[in-house]
Amino acid sequence: ERRLRGAFDPTRLVVRDDSAAHGGHAGHDGRGESHFTVEIAAGAFAGLGRVERQRRINAALADLLKTRIHALAIRVSAPDERAR
Image 1: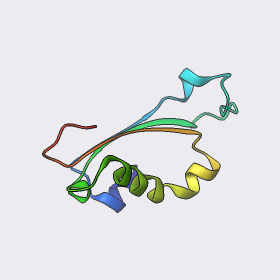
Image 2: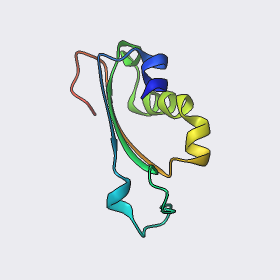
Image 3: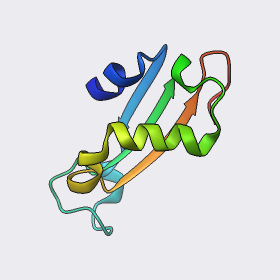
Image 4: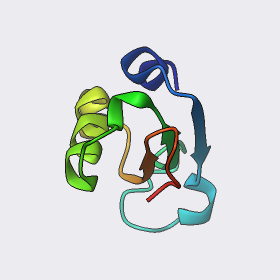
C-alpha cells in the first residue's frame, strides 16, 4: 500500500489480501500474503489504456512480484472513471 501511495498519489486505494482463499493452491507456500487484489484510482492513469496502467502498477511492485506476490488482481481507473 505504501509503495502504491508513493508512486501514484491515489484518490482511492484498497489493497485486499486474498491469500487465505488460496491455501493449498500453486504459489501459496503457507506464509500467507501471496495473493492480492488492488483497487486504485489516480490521476496518473488518466489517458492511459488498461495494459499501460497495469504495467505501471507492476513496475511499482516489481521486486515483490518476483519474491512475495504470486497473484495480483488489479482494478485501476482515473479518478473520474469507474474501475476497469
